[in-house]
Amino acid sequence: MYHQVFIKGLILDPITKRPILLMEDSGHQRILPIWIGAPEANIIALQLENIPTPRPLTHDLLCRVLESVEGRIKEVRICDCREETYFARLILHHDGKELEVDARPSDAVALALKNKVPIYVKDKVFTLADRCDDCESPADSWLQSLGTEETGDYEM
Image (tube, rainbow, N blue to C red; front, top):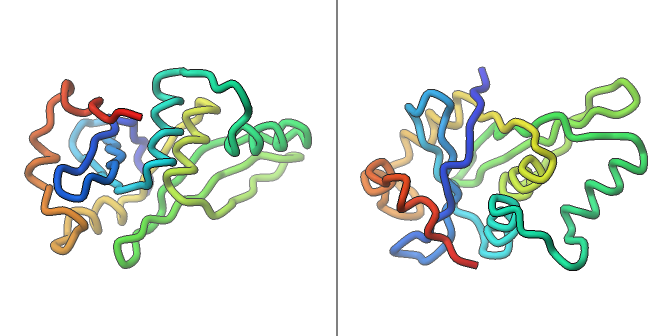
């Protein structure tokens, strides 16, 4: 089963100094942190803050290609986590058909924000994240304790 999530924020891991994308389920019961690269975090931050870019970025290009073939992104699903690597799927609609395309979660989230489509996380992913004893950062209790004012402190 999938659950809709919303972006809680982007923060920097205090230990690794890598950006963390924080997503929270609609019931505010679970947070899913995904460590991402700085370029991907910058793209997501631009989308969250509605900052236009002077030239099209790769995500803009993909959106324009889809538009030109009369396709659209319907939703994003974060569907798996293996060996501390998350996997996502873009659910596309084209010519009356639904298509699934493998994607990195950071790219998928950026596209979801750009296209204003929902993001879903599979139960299994939340469960795997909860069980992770060997995560990239020993930050579980720190992540759970973050308030709203701390979840937007990522700077480009």
